[in-house]
Length: 469
Image (cartoon, rainbow, N blue to C red; front, side, top):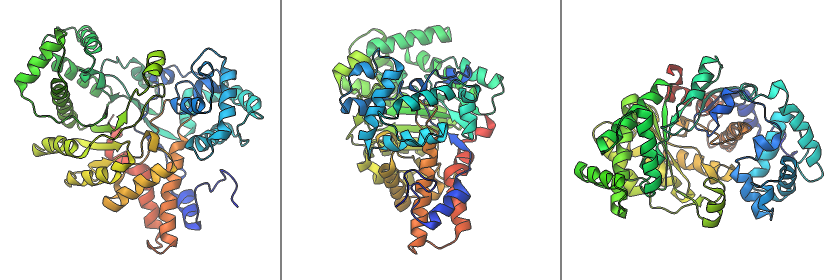
């Protein structure tokens, strides 16, 4: 029987252990998609305690606590940080076979050298020990990042962000590149006219120009796109239920925008046309600048109206959606490819039923210009766990080229999430190790080790061109 979370965690064969320890373990980390707050890196803060870095904003943990019967006062309410941590500690023993059990103890080990299992019996000591370390100079945010051998971090940023924090990080000479990502979802959210008009008004102020028509609006957004590029941005990100790919005319879009500014109700068809036009325009700009376009598809958000009204978005009320993805995604990518303006693209799906669909879709638009130009992205959100990652890796292996995958990301708001890269690397090595020992792949450790290193680091390094940022 293996010990829990030992050095060969998730590695089931001798070959897998060799592949991981000799080829994957020590590679740098390129975290090309995260939600880390740039201001905390800019200020190089120390977290007051483990609750602040671990539980604040982590809706994965919040959902588990609610499912375990924990009162909201101990989750997002006014209880003390230590009381909230104790309720998380009381929940952890009930997370057996949930990925949170692995993440929790992996992070305790990797950051604090704590091997005790978190439970009510160990909560006070773990809280005290971890908090003491977090308050030391060795645990400032920048030290945490550097100590995990991170080379690049990409945050997720609204086009209206002034990027002052990114500028400060760069001017400070921080060795790790912290780059913005252009996420314009709010700019095309015609479902909420009140919020969209407020957004347009704010853009007017930032761009110092009037925005009365669609051309002015797109011009102002293009100036923000240019500004992001000047500040090292190499990626965009779009979080959508499904791709918007309706037919439209320029006249229709112009009229729809005038209705928005007049605060007139839009039909569902008009909303879809506006989103389709704007998403297409964004993609053209991404291609023009050589950016990578990320498309996160399939989340059914804000299911619980009461929870949303009380706590706001991104507080644990989202789930997997069952949207139809294939036809619209094909139309959107094909429209860009027809004029040779399809940017490098990463497709992420949230419904595992679509794994093979997404893996097959990428192959339709790889044109030989770039290895892995259109990627089936790593397992995302609810799929970011052992089974979900393995299924994504197998779907890509069966239908595309796993060897050209750009690897893992954290997609996290926590500075303690970098071991997710380790978790992914262990699973990749275990898959290849199993196949070698089963005689399904040749026993060529050197070549297989190179492929694993590419998946875990070098493919991303070559794909994103961060060296030019």
